[in-house]
Image (cartoon, rainbow, N blue to C red; front, side, top):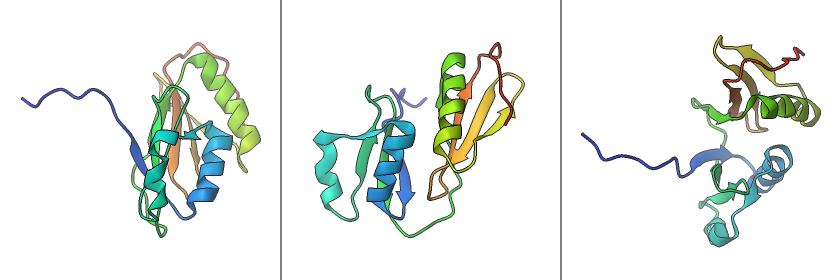
Length: 132
């Protein structure tokens, strides 16, 4: 049996313009540059590490040529937060996020400017869902 894992440390996200991506992730998702790891971004092939205020959500932005992405980054929230995110993303994105009823969960789907797919999910079914 393999040893246990503690957490997901970070997720690699490939973007075509790291500076523009950093602005988008800060504005839309509230993720900020991790100062202690900023030196890695000095290397053009190195990552720019961004995270939320608690460090629970951490992404490594790598500047690369466009590629087809096969993975979705899914973020979990409470029902109350889900409603806040639906409103926020509808204001921040060119198109409102797609809402999906998964019977036991609700999800919002959207992409970053480099077409990296994201999902925000809640398992709280007792919330007022607003269809766009």
